Image 1 (cartoon, rainbow, N blue to C red):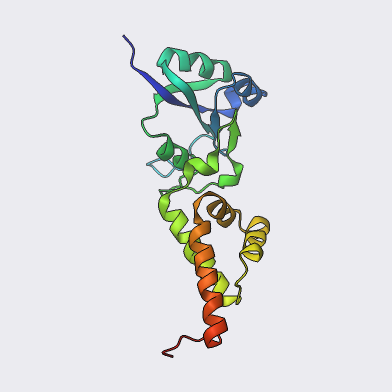
Image 2 (cartoon, helix red, strand yellow):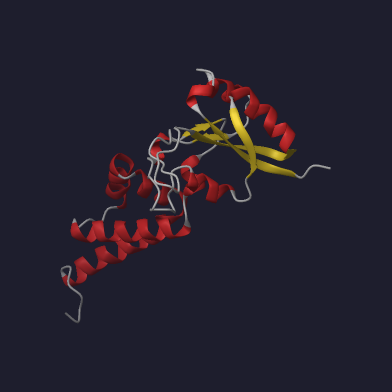
Length: 193
């Protein structure tokens, strides 16, 4: 009996896949990520690897390798790999956690059938980093308006905007209220300064 799991990956080489392989994958209506073209990867001997894409599909329920292989065969995928940790593999698509490897732009990842790449790759520490950056930004720019920060983030820093929309609002609002109170009471300086 075959092992059943939800997430599988393959590699697609552009020269052996059909021109419309991405559309074919999308037609399967299975949430998926397609990496940017890996055209800067170097093997262990220092030679350039053949250009390729990494593809991960994420089924709603458990499937067999053979079921995943049917989809991968239809797009020219080479091999079927069981993905044990979808977050880690998603981050691997751009080598986010391995700075010794070529880095690829997360904005070049293609998300299909409702898959959300940015949500998948976010880490808890990213949220805290973003909150720290927002606090520093508000201090440097003497900002006390949550609305102004939210609008700035929406236009200029989508990573901040996501944190504000998902879970960081309370912390930032409380910081801005407290900061506003400090400015009102002490003219922006702490009482003991």
